[in-house]
Amino acid sequence: MCGIAGILHFNHQPVNPSLIQQVTNAMQHRGPDAANYMTEEEIALGHRRLSIIDLSAAANQPFTDNSGRYTMVFNGEMYNFMEVKSLLGDYNFKTGSDTEVLIAAFAKWGPLCIRHFKGMFAFAVWDRAEKELTLVRDRLGVKPLYYYADQEQFIFASEIRAILASDKIKRRIDKTALQELFSYQSIGYPLSAIDGIKQLEAGTCLQIKNGKINKQVYWDITVAGKKTVDFNDHAAIRKHIRDLLSKSVARRLVSDVPVGAFLSGGIDSSAVVGLMAEASNAAPNTFTVGFTEKQFDESAYADIIAKKFNTKHTHLLLKPTVFLDEMENALNAMDTPSADGINTYVVSKAIRNAGITVALSGIGGDELFAGYPFFKQYLKLQKRKNLYKGTSLLRQIAATLLAGDSNRKKRMQQIIRAPSPVIEYMYPVSRQILSPALVRELTSFKDFSLQDTALFDQLHSKHKKIERFPLLSQVSVADYLGYTQHTLLKDTDQMSMAVSLEVREPFFDHELIEFVLSVPDDLKYPVYPKSLLVESLQPLLPDEIVHRKKQGFVFPWKEWMKKELRSFCEQRLQRLGQRSFIQGRQLDRYWKRFLANDSSVRWSELWMFVVLEHWMEKNNIQE
Image (tube, rainbow, N blue to C red; front, side, top):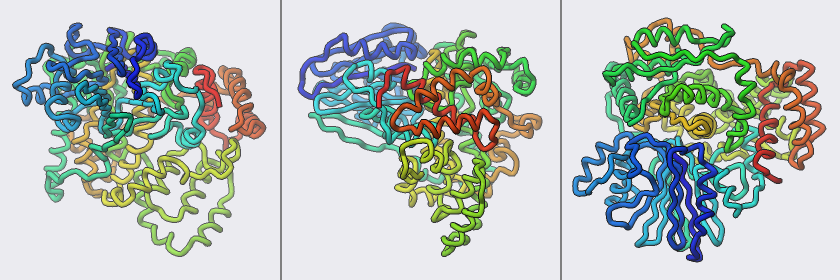
């Protein structure tokens, strides 16, 4: 796991070596083990290394192939690199790294070599012969990649702050992206928080030659995978799911440093740990964050799994107030503003301090196996879709009669008023932080609606492809295009890499996802939590884990914001209220309603504004 960067001048003028060092070193936290740079005529590449596979200096990057034609910087892991290496028998390998296998494969097959690999990655290759720069991002967007282009140059990096460190771009907020941020607590591609900086879409290859930029999608989650199992054979389906997940876990154990696992005691993390125990002769290293206050502590469930699989278990006991103590550090670590992520920062830091560099995580199980309430809600809406035919006026009246300021009622009003119950209208409502009405009230975006967001555009443009999936899978696909990619994965990456911890997610294996998305609803329907996953793994998980009440990290942020964090929040809300895109008086009134215990005002709605102002000030971002 690393940080990568590059600068390409379109006018063929040389790049100042100090500039690529400046850009790359802004990501020192992503790669504390080595820093190297290459400058050559109009191109410069930089790399910060977190050593995981082949720890020798010979595997440092930028890395050049045997022919001398290609030089690469690579962030991520190719889990099946030994399998691909066997296909490259005529290449004289000098290291044991996945980096060298990747560049050898690129030299042989070009950008589409990526179809041979399974992993999480973002990489760039400079072709000296063609004077062409190629950027590739992994299928599901696990690893970030940002870029900026104008008439003179192309700059890319793993983080926004690295591109800003070039001092070539104005530090100006993208107000269109703000609408996305206020709605969903994160920003979807191709936008970023900075005007002019873009995110490379997942599953995409970008090629730059002679000042021209060409984009090619090599993998699309809305393209259904090939049917490999008879869906009438339920036993075969469950077996195939177990096989795919087992292989996914086993691949992610490949490492030349110790590998651990987050263990919360929930279904997903317990499944990962159980499959780790099956895949290795060595006892897994597991880590549970426990808390002194019992209402937050889940360690008893984790202990059950640790004992069952005989893991080397470490119980990291924290006080809930550690989240207050680490809050500002976590906010400062944010490369892009997000209303979430502090939990991930604290847990990642505790595990890194325990001496682990690589940790497996169970995130992604809920999204794939219908673990959220909205999956069932969406099914109910589809059963009532006839109510949307020719009843627009009646529904508008019904929504008007449904008075009230609670978030639940606001969502119900949006669902009732929607022109259709299809996924592009229903899913965004399920994931919104601020309702469109509240965005219009508290900001200058007076004509804003959810249909103005990049997420809606994505879902609408892919509607015909998405509707070919089973209904539960339609929600999963929407989640991968929305919350999963732009909040869950992004926060996991930026908060774990802030403390130099590599997190690997077995549920984000593209072959596993392709298959489970094709499974019919009657088999995937969660009769009990994630029943298809549980039954596919039987008897791996004990009943007390499967049927426990889901808890998760639910800390008293509401109370903290009114007490310990009140001054911190008020200062930032007041300063944000002075900005042109915020209605300062309305925001102040909304804050006062919160302090007065108005139940219709959620702490998370205001926290989004606090985080945004802190991020803008920390990074000197202007309007």
